[in-house]
Length: 291
Image (cartoon, rainbow, N blue to C red; front, side, top):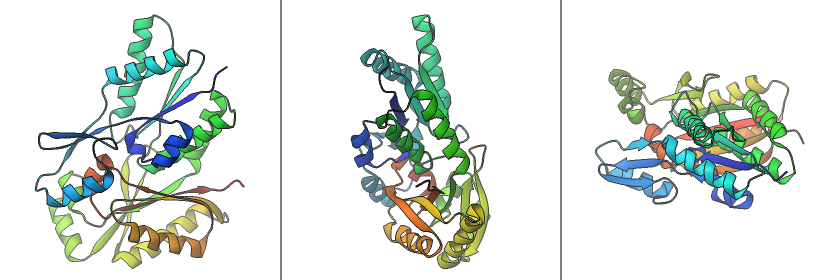
């Protein structure tokens, strides 16, 4: 049996070095500034996106890959690897129709061929490297010789044990995206309120807490992680930021004061997720080390 093939979409924010090292197939999503369309990670880098975002008056829009495009991706991979399974891990169904589109693409291919195909579509119930870490783990297991069932079990285990929080630098984009009201955004800005957000078991973003000022917000984030992990002190961590590496380093330094960090991954929040959270956001994803 040939090795399973790992597929994801560009909102996983998997660093390019990891994508290339493990041969992960990344399907780009699209961000638009007016009439200009860009494939995330191909036509526009994260840095280029945030630079343009600063100079635009209108909020950019995003769009997911169509079911027919997923169908063609799955077809091509199965034809190139006839004895392989495809494991396709995607952005939370609670935030986007990407998961549903990939499921429909699989269904369309099965209908056309007249038989089931060995494609396993996973709802990550998260965004950015909160599911990029699932993609990376799956790709590493492929290299270690794990079969499809073992990889899917480990992905589900990681979904259950990961913990994550993120902090936005400005409430402007959450307000423009309809997640908070204008009055709340204005008051929060005037009072320097930093909301601490997370993603629930249903894969939907929710507000955990808020603090006045960045330092108090980071201190509260550390309290939350200590509560989440209890007696566990050895963890893996990933930090994703939207043009705010200094903020990510500040949080990383605080994490080192409370935990023993094993693998540390740094990555950018890409254009599609960045369009909804804005510049300056830092997201922190942690899960227990098993070393």
